[in-house]
Length: 116
Image (cartoon, rainbow, N blue to C red; front, top):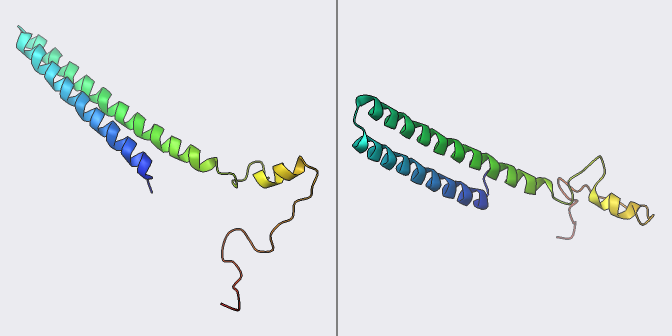
């Protein structure tokens, strides 16, 4: 699922892509107006297609960058295991203290309280 921040960035990139496509079409019209031969018109159309493709490529690169940023922030969580040791273990090893672990697992269901 996408985060809100990633969605906003993707929408901004999509808007930028639409502006770039619009600019390419305007440039094509300007080149077509100044073109004297049929070959120049074809070249103007090819330039416009190339600029549109470039804008779409930039959009996809931006989306990939946003997804990578999101993934990078998820993986920098302090309880994520790195090299088979958690951040908690590194912290206590430097102090020379043996870490104590909770009696219940960190993931899954916690033991129920009988009195509730």
